[in-house]
Length: 56
Image (cartoon, rainbow, N blue to C red; front, side, top):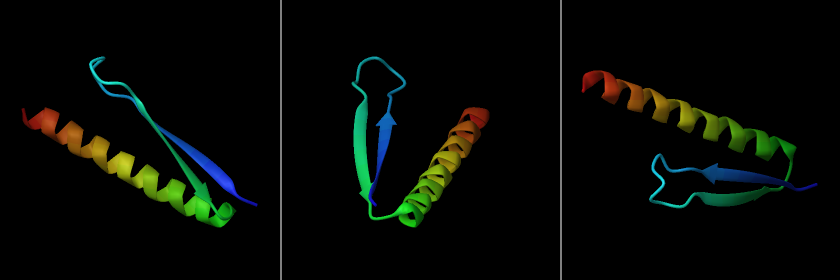
């Protein structure tokens, strides 16, 4: 059974259109790995942005 993940990126300004990316995985365990990695990337990105805003 294959799984499809839909990733959407929305810019902070309205000048740029949003983007959509579809990922197809070969099974549920691979889907879980992708989700875990993507969640970690988003969390680290948020942390870096908050630190930059605090330093400004």
